[in-house]
Length: 155
Image (cartoon, rainbow, N blue to C red; front, side):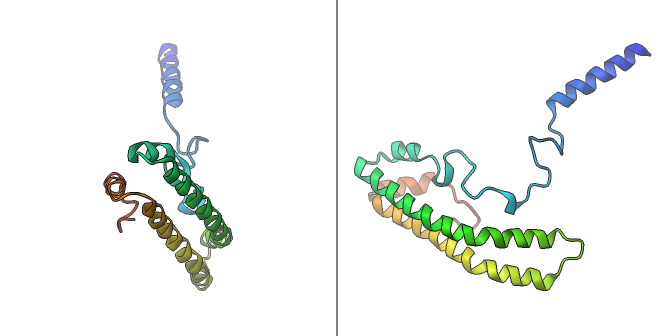
């Protein structure tokens, strides 16, 4: 009986060290869309892997400088919009987490969010267009072939 208990305890320890438990610190089980960082937690930050793009598209130094300037201007505008959006998202999240959700308030918050969110999405599209204008036609074709669509709409 003691031998069986020891084996079960060892098995539990081994499995516990290998598995990710739902409430472990490594993974937030209730991680929601609005809790994600806006600055691109994926490899390469907001714009993807810039150096890889430069190598793959064989950008000239002038092109690299122009794209970096476009990225800098985009970040400033995007951050300003994000500062408008984030407090509204927090209010919406807090409202949705209440036991008794006020749908009128939710609708009001969604309407307030829609304006800055549309501006942010348009800014992202404008950014992509501005960057692609720096490329030659061959580089544009190559970039479009290698860039997977971000969502079901292809952008």
